[in-house]
Image (tube, rainbow, N blue to C red; front, side, top):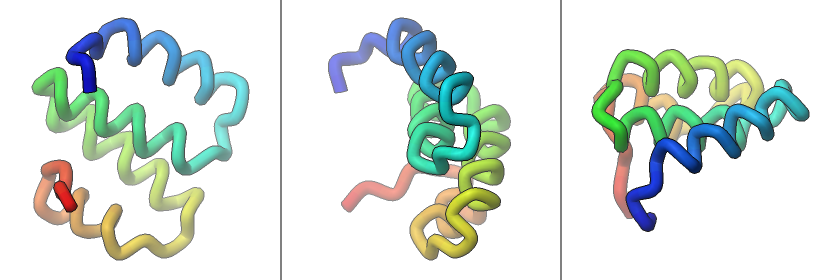
Length: 71
């Protein structure tokens, strides 16, 4: 939210390294990449997150539309 995406990326990568099966961390890392303008990397991480979640309508939509879905 504060626009400190590079710092957030470091923290999220560390979280993913600690808990590689945590779909929420994977999804947020994808969101972070999207906000940095790296759509391909974002979609890649969202796909990994979906594998961990199993089923997520919101995440499936993010992947399909290749963008963050705002509430």
